[in-house]
Amino acid sequence: MKHTGAIIGYGGMAGHHVRSLEGYERCRFKGVYDVDKKRLEAAESEGMTAYPSKEALLADDEIEFVLIATTNEVHKELAIDAMKAGKHVICEKPVTISSAELEEIIDASKKYGKIFTIDQNRRTNPDFLLMRKYAENGTIGEPYVIESRVEGSRGMPTGWRTIKALGGGMMLDWGVHLIDQLMHMVNGKVTNVYCRMYSIQYPEVDDNFRLTLLFDTGLTAHIEVSTNNYITHPRWYVLGRTGTLQIDDWDCKGKIVRNTEKEDIWEEEIVYTKAGPTKTMAPRSKNSTKTIVIEDESGEPYNDMLPVYDQFMDAIEERAPLKITAEQALRVMKVMEAAFRSHETETAVNTNI
Ligand SMILES: NC(=O)c1ccc[n+]([C@@H]2O[C@H](COP(=O)([O-])OP(=O)(O)OC[C@H]3O[C@@H](n4cnc5c(N)ncnc54)[C@H](O)[C@@H]3O)[C@@H](O)[C@H]2O)c1
Image (cartoon, rainbow, N blue to C red):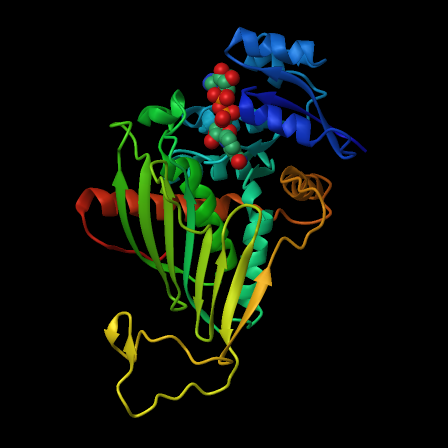
């Protein structure tokens, strides 16, 4: 059975949902409401119904679920209105602009008995899955540091992302994905958060940030989002006890260098290197490491939306519980709030998240 949905907020990301679901068997979008008339006209020209108001969309009995893909400051109000009108909801990230708002959504979801999920579409990105595989399968030993970075030098796009009240800034825009990936992967609590934010281009919002999270498993996560880096770091850099992993970019090109379990014993005499006399920083002896080239293994053109919609449809059809839940998003929201607090107070914030 094909489930029928509608969209509130038909901008760039909503268009991505529609295109990604072309040919998808389990659901379709019947129509759209947007405050911008031009976006309604665009929806109509693509064969969808243009609803004259949010109320008209929510009054359509054929609509079972609503995708909310507006700017972030109205996600809460729209999600609650949709669930009150009897619709299930899939909401774009960041789910809300505060944890208090998300708690209201969770209450509404329980009250009206409606499913609420979030488009955390980066949990299935090939680069993340590849890093996770090697971090978890023992190739580099137990990981103790994971560095996750998304960097560019072209600044932030103009528009709502530069306005704080609309939920702008890179922490809410990209931080939410990178934190979600690691909290999804690590089976432990975040016990400490330290963050520095920078407003290089737009004074109102963080257009760059550096964040460090400590987990109670002993893992340290370092997350950076930069819009002003003219020389970039690798997408992933992971230190394990017996090896190091690096994934360079979205193409998933990278390598692992790990020890071969052959002993690399220091000679008695002093070791001279380009760094001067130092044994610590001297190159390893030959054959004591092995390099493994890694690359994208999926082999398939990647569609980030299908796993998100599959789990949503499974929940609607009562086949399986949601995989992307509001409770998970609440933890991520709380970490982001701790990051803002850390930046404002110039201290590391102890947490139990
Ligand atoms: N998951 C991802 O990878 C990803 C990527 C990009 C954007 N997003 C998210 O998608 C959402 C939209 O981002 P975008 O880049 O498409 O922005 P956008 O500006 O292109 O589109 C937003 C649309 O919402 C409309 N809108 C605003 N307030 C409204 C309201 N009250 N009622 C109806 N329509 C309203 C605007 O007119 C606009 O057409 C944001 O929450 C953003 O964070 C997610």
